Image (cartoon, rainbow, N blue to C red):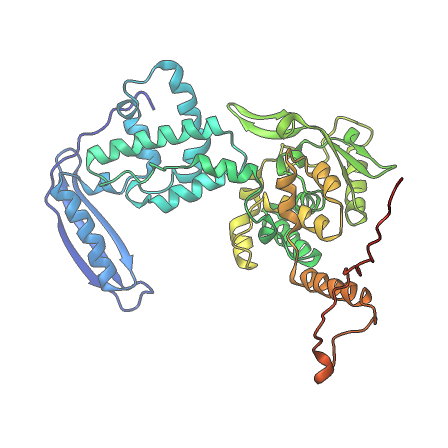
Length: 427
């Protein structure tokens, strides 16, 4: 990163053509040719399904050439461009600032966006990557440093003429953290419908993973049924499980950090006790049997024994691909926690108990899981009608049609008849 110098863009003359190949699935091949003073003759081609797309592709490179950019500079990936221009983009920064910027570049930017061409990066792509970092519980400070490094690299691309505007300048990204901390405005809408959907999701993720590792499905089931974060599931150890009362003492979580993955206290540093329902007890028993008598052993690990994070779960199971195929495009790893809390609320668990299980700081956060369904609203209306009808003197329902249906002196169930007044004289 430090030993490579950026290449100054060269003004070039492009020649282009479009070849039609009717026997191909993408029959229109657009091709560019130019002469680089340093490397000699160069060419670049790409196939398209229609001629219009091929022309647009050529026009993009011709516009860049008029700004003095050779096509090989325009097609470079973010990783290539950032590596070549790192020193130039980071000039003026203090040495102590460089370490977190480099960590953000290597740990977050390159895995998420490094393979993309610089000219392909848009505001929408940056938004989605940021949402993934927040969902993966990356710290606010780490995201700030990561975005700062990304913005500087892309700002250099603007100065070099590769792009016209910086698509990585995001305003208000801090609000994503507040929404996540508040469990969103309507977390119930993010929950899985029922147990069958959860089983289908867990099996599909395990099947799609390398070597069809069944442990990924166990992580998903356990997280949903305990309303836990993925980091907390990764942090559970054998000694945290009480098989007499079938409870789990949640006291740590696994989270990414500079240099690797670490264990730390749960969010808010609050220990809490979570019930282990019958549906996942066989799963827990098998996990305890697998680790033997080691109380410090982790119940959930990756296929090679490594610790689990939300990002590892996403990548190992091809999460985005699987949930899209199942029609659950909105679903993220943290939504397993929303699923568990929604199911518990629908089961009638009292709100103060649900707050303790969730580990919420404020009761208003827990109340978001208590939004009544249409059925409960109808039941509430029927209960009110029954109460009012039972309190009427005649104990009856609605009056019949006709003259008797209207009374000149309507009565109210709570009306109290006036008592005669008496005057007393005290001597």
